[in-house]
Image 1: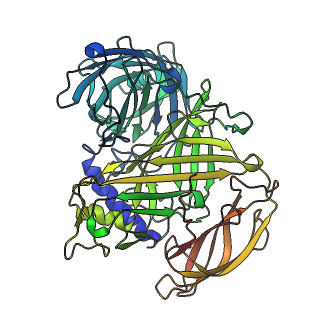
Image 2 (image 1 turned 60 degrees about the vertical axis):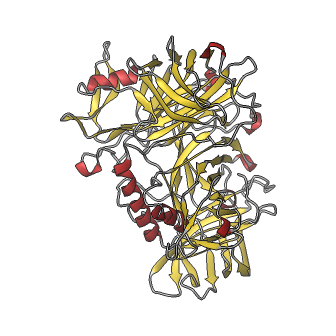
Image 3 (image 1 turned 30 degrees about the horizontal axis):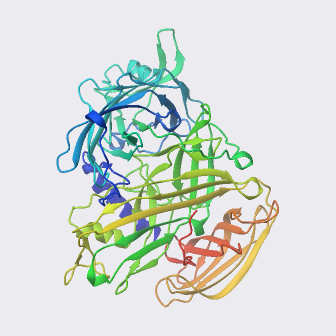
Length: 627
């Protein structure tokens, strides 16, 4: 599938999702409907008051500050004209106590209510963008709402939490100033998951008979281009003694508040020491994806006798990772994460039907093999969810993200689209909610390495699974009891810091791709390419539309990186990533190739894509590489 085709399908998914915004929320990222080894026991008297762990608990926001005055760009403010070079991000670690009142269980389901009897207090922080803007997020307090408790239902047998809704008030000087410059704004309480967001809570038994809990929530609050006729304004950090701040118009501004609370003690992670990354605070960096260790996929644990058993689908991915660092606060720094397409595309990818969104990583044609049927999966790509942005809290002393990372992405591929279409509206076209551990560390020759290993659990009982031709002609399969899916998202990305001197070269003939196509290639690519000669040629011998020969005429981007096990000296590398323009044997049009070749002895890999899918091959590892 071409990149144009991928984008048009993404647009269809997102357009379908937007009218459902009022119900497109999610809770229970990790909950599975299977019995715990021992059912949970409620605390004596059904009430418990526990201190939260400050290292594991924080509130924060990722404020998007665009200039989107056109009505068609609102209320979501996704025109892409972002001011100040990125999000305004901040996190403040919280201290205090939380009370949970449980009610008498009915059929092992216990309703509960959560309150903060004395409020939770946070450290002073600074909301900062990469360029020019900084505003003090000071006097941080988390309060209960005045008319609605946070609540949910706990299944004591499985640990599953349902009907979860956390209602709180975020207060600090930034929000107060925001209200002053927008006098018609009636600040709402923040509700997680809200109309579009995430809420996840996990209870664990303690030795003293009480229950530890960990909560993470995020939500999306667009302000649009006006508030009752007045333009939306952003307070500037030029204020008088009574907080009379200057302000500017910011049509399309949106808030992305997030909250993490945990009564569990922080894990005793060892300090990273010499492996700690030199963080470029209040700035943005871009890392090259190591495709062999970066993938999306799904474990299809579906109870469908006709398929004969389970299957695992996986596509290695090409692209980049953008990290935006905020202000250092103690041992912590907020980090916003984005998936970007491969570097070197001299013109932007074709636009989405919804402005402000863009292509992320691109994948490969692959086959999902059940014991009795095989599915061809094509057109694989992802894009970030712009409404529930990925923001984590990095502990700079350990290199680990506090509680891991939630990274929501929209996926595109044939099998997923067929599943959505054939279930007739039962599956909301929402993004995948991938959560898991993430960290930053130093790699070979002082490179910066980002690693993420996320997953999700989705029950699939009674849902329709398409036939291998993706039609429902002659009927389709229906999944039986106990069926579930576990989508996963793995990422490893690298930013070298040494000066490149190597020239990467090599060739191979009659190679068999993981999709069953034979191909050959040769390349000579200088890692420092300015003014130097280069060459790349690729031939796919398939008799289908993917067959042909590409010859590169122009080199637009090169990034050389090392695998984690590399022993190369500074300036030398075992992996080359490049983008170039050239000719395709089947027409006279210009085409683009995105390529990554790893010569690492422990991690050999090749991926070649022409126009993001016109022709694509790779040597997908047989094992599932963990980043």
